[in-house]
Picture 1 (cartoon, helix red, strand yellow):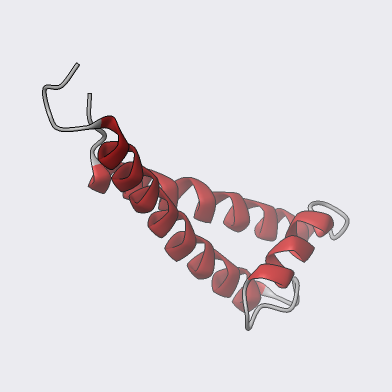
Picture 2 (cartoon, one colour; picture 1 turned 30 degrees about the vertical axis):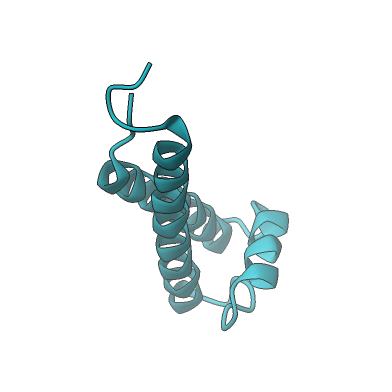
Length: 89
């Protein structure tokens, strides 16, 4: 069985970006929520310095979408590469 690289890329982008988007929006409404999670995002993604407003939520979400998409594509590619040729059991 082989993984669909495009599908896993899109899935990773939606899930990882969605995690940061939802956490960032809820954090704007209720500041203690997800502060540690957003601090992790601040340490990973350049240009994002914590939840300072809706613009920063968009920035971290875009970073996470790209990161999740690339991670999903690399995961599917690596799995397919290590699984062997199509049809091999």
